[in-house]
Amino acid sequence: MNQFDLWGERMRVDPLPTLALMRAEAPIVRLFNPHQGAPEWRVTRYVDVVELLRDPRFSKDKRKLSDQARSRYFRVTEFDRLDNHMLYADPPQHTRLRALVSKAFTPRRIAQLRPSVVEATTRLLDQAQRQDSVDLLDALAFQLPITVLAELIGVPVEDQERFREWTRILIAPPSDGDFDALRRMAIEFQQYLEEFLVLRRRRPRDDLTSALIEAETHGDRLSSVELMSMVFLLIAAGFETTGNLIGNGVWALLRHPAELRRLRATPALIEPAIEEVLRYCPPVKNSTGAFALTDVEFRGTLIPAEELVVASLLSAHHDDTQFPEPERFDITRSPNRHMGFGLGLHFCLGASLARLEATVAIGTLVQRFPGLQFAADPETLRWKDGVFVHGLDCLPVTWEAR
Image 1 (cartoon, rainbow, N blue to C red):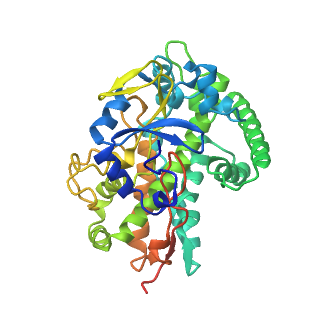
Image 2 (tube, rainbow, N blue to C red; image 1 turned 45 degrees about the vertical axis):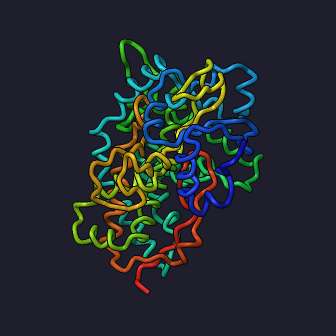
Image 3 (cartoon, one colour; image 1 turned 60 degrees about the horizontal axis):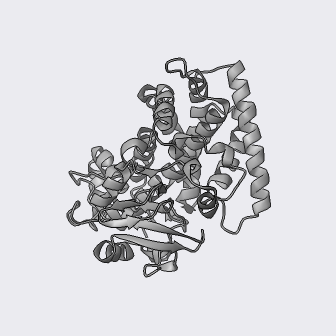
């Protein structure tokens, strides 16, 4: 069943050749996921991915699965109570949750964060510059979104270091980590969120958490479990996605020095440059899985009920039927109809915040350090081994050209 190895070392070095072969030979293919011990389908062509993400015959809600199918794809964890958010919901529940959250997660609230993003970026780069070289993922890419999220959510200053530690470990745990320790940390984190939400109900402030508590549509509000799940979703999505977007963007620019020079010469190109990063090396390589709740004929292929289907966004972004010369990194590419933040019902609500952070972080970095270079052979860098996120294990850089 596994004529394409999506879990081997080759995918960590360069996934694009394998994805190109899949688009050509098996654009909708059933594979066996050795990590889950279960079958899943991968969809790799652009037009098919677009149709899949809009197809109402596939469900994100695992509660609609039979007990047998649910146990095949999911294991009970300490995070089950945090799954009651819109990422794993279908209409009408998804519609209800998104309407409530959108009332709190407004463009005005995001715009107000710009000074904080600029200040945090400057401070982190000041710290990083004291060293000859750094892992930019640790020094900037993942530090910035944690700092911004803490302010957005309203985490008290005295709790922010603990909050950052929880976020770093729980959202992206090391593969060789102590599972019992992770379980304890998960329980501790949930207890903190519960107490934090109680405090915000009693003493609301001008933060997103208070706005979520107050959000109301036709007399309907988020329940306590939904609130906790939504805060967790914002943390998880905002941390990993934005961190990878910043890291992938710097990697792509350093791999394409002519485009880096164009950006330095014309700083206004930073916005289309971020859009090209979202296409060329998106921070999320695959959609979250969906399930066919009945046998579904999809683009001429029969997908059995209760089997997992995943859309490969990275593959779709390198489909030459949609993107001319897809392997060319072009910071002025237009049109650029990428799906870096998803599509349709599940388009990322935090896209504007991620764009803001990436624009400030990468724009500031490339202008401030004209000698920015890799501090290690770029051919030795590896992509993380994960189902959904697409980011590097590390990104060593130095400030002076060698």
